[in-house]
Length: 129
Image (cartoon, rainbow, N blue to C red):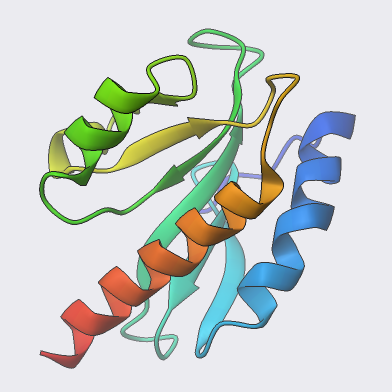
């Protein structure tokens, strides 16, 4: 069941920055999932999630963040290297996913774009196997 996305100004602004990145990725598309804008790769019937965008004002810690798929070991490396920017996201963190805060004053949108690109490649590569 898809839940309606409750958009906020900061979520809309983040989507404006990240949608062009997703649009440039092969076989990538966006659709709502569990109330959040979610990015998938692959054919509609076999599509797999590679990232999602969350405005957590109503729950958790009030973060605006990107959750993205990552290969084994990357979650720990990113979090230990920059614990104020990266975190283990709920629900998917146990599978190695990483959260990147987008609500900090020094947000690097090129870094966020790189995380999207790498997550897409990681999931797409797994689908080809």
